[in-house]
Length: 286
Image 1 (tube, one colour):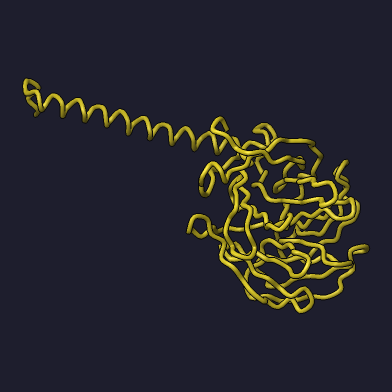
Image 2: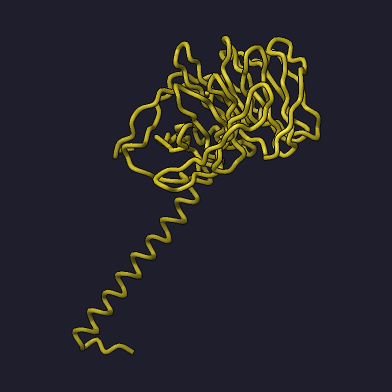
């Protein structure tokens, strides 16, 4: 038992009470934050870096999106969206009208295959599968199957830089594939401030950089494909309003870019909307 008549012991007692209050407050704040994130469907960022590397967004347009589409890959090509959807027994390849959200063309994958990343190459569409180690090449017009190919990793995101395909597998590695043989030519580890950035998912090549969703977060990273260094972070927290989250609404996962207009389109798994956004610098007020 402390003797409160002692000045030093009184100071110690006050210090202990103060520390207890501080830690108690932090614990309560952590719990409340967790509840808010869970209820809104948002997730905490994987890595909070320098403010100068941060971007946020402004919504320009909102378009309808099929809430049955478990989006795994998304591209904008010749005025239409093309989408790869996942889940066993539900995976598909789709051609979608952006303005109305209408599915104009669709084929289903075998129930034993989980659809993943998607990109266009010349007059074809190239689609990955998750754990099956199988990729598909389809005719861009009628979706007829042209060929299949194999890879040794999991398949997550897919894009191209005009000369080679770029693939992610859920780790911190990007793989560069020959678009004719589909053999891996090279790879790079993605890092930010010396830290490997994992869970790289859906990809889009935009003006010399690879944009990558970080799975289970509201973050997109911008990557220098030559060095693997992250050049910037995009915080998309709150883009899907809390009242738009249904019980089966999934995480952010879908980046499409129109090189003609510069339009950047964002969606997620079973989201009710596709958002066209403009990137803006983050500030201390964000």
